Length: 337
Image 1 (cartoon, rainbow, N blue to C red):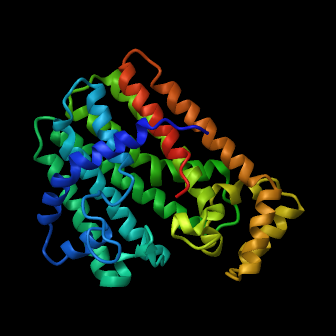
Image 2 (cartoon, rainbow, N blue to C red):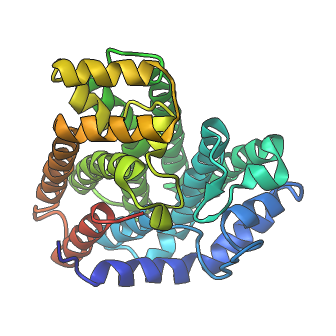
Image 3 (tube, helix red, strand yellow):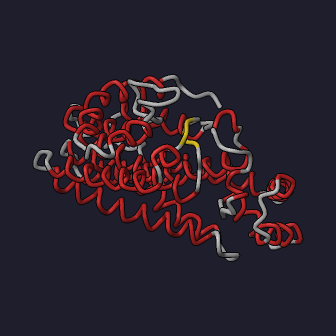
């Protein structure tokens, strides 16, 4: 897939715009957790990258593009972009503790450096500060803060559902989609909604952007699931087959199990053995691919991207912004990490 260079350029613009506001917001956190957040964002410690947001900044970029779609200057949505980045990083800090992941972006995960309690406190502090940033914004701030609160609750529910899948043998593709709606799509939807709200957007535009973000979020999770099994450790910073030795019911697994054939039963048996032996992970990977799990996941990601792009192919979304949103969607779902 050939992806426009417009997406990286747009993401780079977001990083530049957010650098100082993000640093200011981190400095307003309790002093005890500031070093944890600075390390997590990549500003301190091994391979420090001062001057970056710490990630891809996809969500923050959605905030700013949505404000532009509403005809507002990006300045009105900077606080929303910082708030969204804070909530996203709250989820990552907590995810690393829950999953026992020792690396994040090729660096030691924050909890391995500062301990689990401080990592969890840092994440909680980020959520509280995100709410405060929006609540103190202009007249639309309180409404945007309420939107963020709903998104956080949906994210938590989606994460809890994902954890419950590890103990279940009856997870369906519909169950997976419900989980992805909360765990991943909720915050992307909040990103577009908050950006548009802060710029005073009308409901039809908010709805179009929200639908775009919903489908993009589900596609994003599908790609994440592919990388969790087939991603290159050199690029993802995660071990081969990470999701399998953590016994996660990701979309490739769920789709492969849905066939109900002999291969699916063999895969179920291996998953229930709760083994993390490399040979067993390799066998599970082969069974999933042979049983169509990889193909089904790639098809679902492509279908969701098509629906996302259709949602913004409407008069309410300015053509220039639609082009940027299209490039961002293709970039985000063609990623290798």
